[in-house]
Image 1 (cartoon, helix red, strand yellow):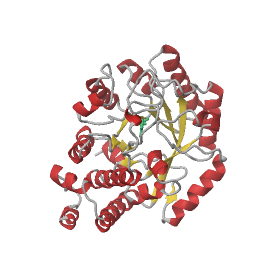
Image 2 (image 1 turned 90 degrees about the horizontal axis):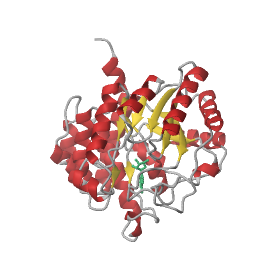
Image 3 (image 1 turned 60 degrees about the vertical axis):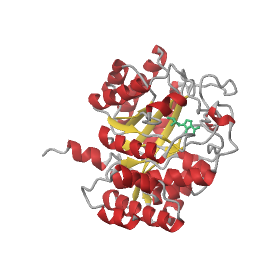
Image 4 (image 1 turned 90 degrees about the vertical axis):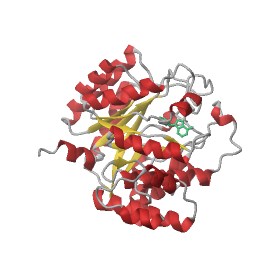
Length: 363
Ligand code: 5AD
């Protein structure tokens, strides 16, 4: 059955709902290997054997939201809150630019206050001045007003990543407080698209109560909204969250495999988009999560540019990787790790998704 499905995948064939459910439910190791190698082959064919790198700046861990799964939710009083001063952010951006990352991601807890909106606008203005518009910028700053999204786009942001978290409205309601709106999240995604951002979304994989059918629907949603990039990863409990209280049932290996099956199924469904090998994979499988993600079809990786003092306060989930290693050494290590799986970092390339480039190509 798996081989039949994979044989059908030629350009243009769209995996059906039942086929996606089947793939996501696979358990046998030999079948998983066949699946991952087909996804890797697809990635290599479309994107080459290179991996796009993003410099990640976790700008602030202040958050006005209270998601039941997230370690930086506003009710977690154990987290020391920070916002990186403007000059330090600029230094991180300079580092990324000089080291040919060509693309950065600005991420933070969700904040809608004027000071924050202004801070982001000022950072964007400076990036474009400093780099002569030669650095691609992804924002990952949650739900904002249409005007704010528009303002940041006009100041020079190119891409926006807003995870749906799940596209099942009932499940969404279970993992968020009542004042968090699924409909508003969807509305934001469509607004971002309309404004002209390269659009990224994603889901939490392996949430309590989530089914293979939910995950198959998530992939069909990616298609429907015509995403350019995906950032999704396994759900990992955080001890200071309502959902994380019950960590006993959490099976790291199962969570990792489910995350990898989702990457592979997404690559086979949307061959030309960018898919990140997210930090959560590395948390579940230290020193090899990145490789497993790529070998299952991912083609983007983020390097955290923050100082250790900030990194240790951005714990979205338990065991989030948090090293104090010098970034250059870390980068060197990543280069070596990738070369062992016959891949390389595409330094100096913006790394827009092929999907996006094809869309904007004049006919
Ligand atoms: N496990 C995995 N990912 C998480 N995130 C938040 N909490 C967790 C968790 N416990 C993810 C969410 C959010 C992103 C910034 O981090 O998907 O969108």
